[in-house]
Picture 1: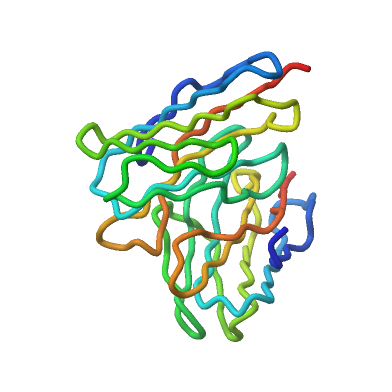
Picture 2 (picture 1 turned 120 degrees about the horizontal axis):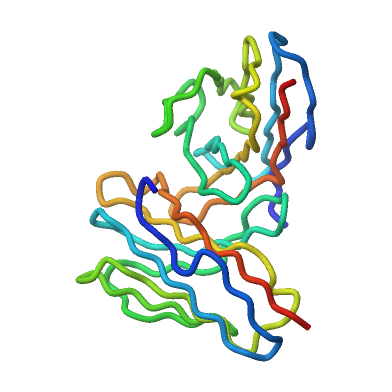
Length: 112
Length: 112
């Protein structure tokens, strides 16, 4: 198992609430990623970071925002959750000199 | 799919049989990786093949890459019930190998 953690694992929340999904890694990786995955479907990159104070939007447009104040921490925030945000959110990281990404266990978000 | 298709979408085999999954992609790549995802969990990296390689082995896994056809295959030999999972190919692009584009996945069921 990789040393990358996500909390909460499951979240059911009402429309309009603000939520933050946490992602932390203890491997000292400089690159971190957020993916969105609907059940049984492919992963879509929504945000990535190449290091502290560096964040970029991914290939899939998302209303969420991210921050990277510390190397090990890459939280994702939704200011106002909607049912269309219901999905699984996967965090990943990658070290220097390698291509493979290490994934956290994911957060399954349901917005009612 | 944003990158390509995986074929078949679902595969059911008996324990001990071999499982073959195929992946096609659209753009020029730097590397191609295969990941496994158990139900409701994060992804686990299995194997990476670089664009200048044609075949790679790791334990019961064999990966081939044909850049002229923009395709790859993953062979799992002597399958076990524990191999039941979804398998995704992911390509690292030539212009930005830090980001991966995932295929649509193959759901493998190995019957005991």
